[in-house]
Amino acid sequence: MDYLTRYDIWCKEALLTSEEREALLAMTAEDDRKGAFGAELQFGTAGIRGIMDLGTNRLNDYTVRRTAQGLAAWLCSTELPRKCAIGYDSRHNSRLYAEICACALAERGIHVYVYHELAPTPMLSYAVRQLGCGCGIVVSASHNAGAYNGIKCYGPDGCQMTDEPAAVVFHMISEIPYFVPAQADFASYMEQGMVEYIAPELWDAYYDRVLQERIATEPASNLNLLYTPLCGTGNKPCREIFRRIGANVDIVKVQEQPDGDFKTCEYPNPETDAALNESYKIARETHPDLILGTDPDCDRVAVAVPWGDGFRKLSGNELGCLLMDYILGELSAQGKLPQEPVAVRSIVSSPMADRIAERYGVKVKAVLTGFKYIGGEILDLEGRGEEHRFVFGFEESCGYLKGTYARDKDAVVASMLTCDLAAKLKREGMNLAEKMDALYEELGWHEAKVVSCELTGPNALELSAKFMADFRANVPTAVCGIPVTEFTDYGTRITRNLLTGEESPVTLPKSNVITLVLGDKGSVIVRPSGTEPKVKLYLTAVDHDRAKAQQLLQSLAEEMSSFLP
Image (tube, rainbow, N blue to C red; front, side, top):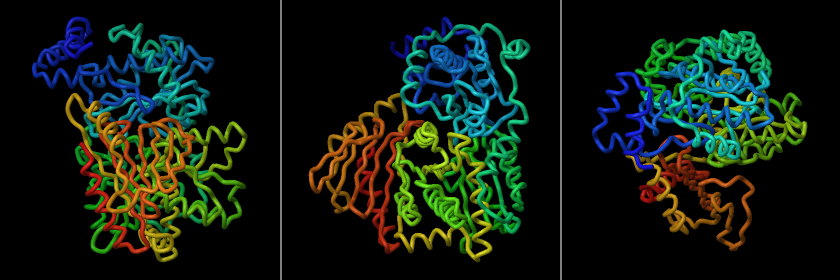
């Protein structure tokens, strides 16, 4: 079906308000119609995400309801409990979409638990497990700009839905008409008891569970923290945890309250330095020991420290390595490191974490990008009664988890651990950046960078697919004059040693990712984004001389950027 046919169907059949109909009829430009109706939102990385507007390729009441109906059909086809937990963030329409999802599930006889107020994504993962649900939903677009929202779907283990059930859900969604009206409204299902609010006691249980992951033996009362929730869900839970560990907290007032427009932070992504710009303004006056920010759905965290005349923001890789070293070091010192401990990172995260773990006799397992794969490793351990072996998991995009109470990244527990580490280092006369540099000096400078190419227009997905196909057909044998020693295509699930010609199978699931290893000098990883119309290059340069590592990273970025569309 082409975009004009989809557009005509919506004009004739959608139960639109007068304003929505006017907006639809105002789509006279071809690019506008093609952008809104040129495709259907894809159910990828455990859900849908898109710009909020009318159309099959946009997030709106109809695409949200259809997605929830597909999830309900899947749940009813399984032997899983017919119960679902729903959480939502501070974005425009998040509460509305949560209620639309609740109605779509309730009309299929599924009992629904909804947070009575906005709550972090990891709290939804926790609720799914605690309430014995067969699935869960978070209404959020994570760190995207305010025009976006999304529906993230979770399985009974509290993980974002993995590929196999997601494919079934996507098939069921595709068979559901867009304009089937709801059988009853949210208030009616509340009165019937099919939908209920999650009890406040679950909040306290979550806080207690997070605090169980604390390994510090002293309060963080010496730490002066400046915190921003970036207008999202972290304000209440993070500040409660900070209070309980004794940290002294100042708040970035202009980003304290929920704001779907993110007026003071247009792109609330913890990976970017700009996310902390408002924090830097205040920090120049208040001089905190640590600046910390959580993204709108509070599953990712960013940190910065005073550095010279300004501030140094640590990358997601750097904080992951620091937390790895802190957790393993403290558990070892306290005699609490389990036998055969398991640490996990994504394949695009820094291999420096592996070197840190080796010092404690811990082997790090690398998994595909997406925290659901880290959660999958925990599930595998749990199936063998060995979940206690999991000590830490992280991905370079600022996502971290200690503990098995949730199966998604959790900025609340990561913020607590970061504050405890910062307080410990302060007592020793150091800060996080100085500790990181000490690790670099010991293990080699692992300079890393992500180069993103944003694809625009109605053919963005096709451009992304063509780029990956072209790159596969023309993989370089050397980058910046450094021979490629190993090539892995996660699409064909084959690794080839280019020095010996030996091939070996990849045991991870099939994925549209290519990795080039440059001996001991670094690596290049190429993949399309799973949540945005982007192609990403993950570059790592390694050298015991910092200047040489930085120069190599710059050269890698320049040479590899020439491949981008």
